Amino acid sequence: MAVNIRKFNTFTFFKLPSAWWCGVRLKYLDQRKAVVTVTHKWFNQNPFNSMFWAVQGMAAELSTGAMMIDQINATGKKISMLVANNNANFSKKATGKITFTCEDGHLIKEALEKTIATGEGQTIWMKSVGVNTDGVVVSTFNFEWTVRLKS
Image (cartoon, rainbow, N blue to C red):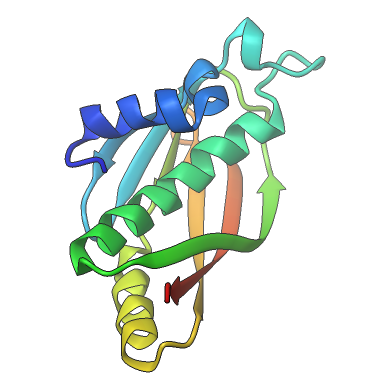
């Protein structure tokens, strides 16, 4: 899987093509934080001339999921991951370049350690906040991730 950001973005072209074509790109990734950007264009807009909510959702989910994938790979174990639930709040019209940041990577390690130790599935909630170029929050997404050791 992805070893660096460029390879991860290539991965999205093949495995998440709708996100890639909408302009969703991973910009930064470490064990604690992931940053994903997407720019409002004619092909990812809604009838109100702002970014379609689902495009924002793809970018927000990738900011949480990229860290999950990275940390699962680091364990060397076969662990499944799945979004079980999510919610979102939209506070401003999303136009221009939107940057989604998740800083909940610290939650992943504990969940992975528990699922490896017990064999039972674990869940964690991770938050991604989208801001425009002026630093104004346009949307906030929360994702409930489940992880489980594969048999």
